Length: 168
Ligand SMILES: [Zn+2]
Image (cartoon, rainbow, N blue to C red; front, side):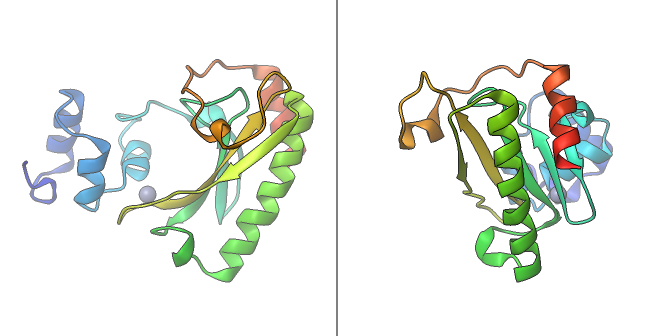
């Protein structure tokens, strides 16, 4: 594989557009795919600004582009952290207090029976994030909810606005 660190940003963008670079290869070259996407016109994941429901200086919260359920949300730190073991206590408190609020908002707005939380960040270049996955009344309780098939994201403007209002 080409050493991505030796390439210019334009060269990397070209490789991405040709489908020749995976997110994992970027990460392994210490290039954050999330940040690279933001600073290069959404070349990896498209422009996802419409999916953001909350943002401040420490964290951001957004609807997931390939959700495991309607209302699947991620709460992510703005700074890079390898995983949860790596975060400071202030960030930890902030993320989990916010996640509690977001889980209650999701349950109410999406009328789910419950909302599950998981985190499994791994790899050198990461934003620490937790996944909030709704479980609906037609779904069984239990850990299978963490691996429900990925769906295509369908925008529900009304719910997006309701989430933004609830998380303000
Ligand atoms: Zn990043």
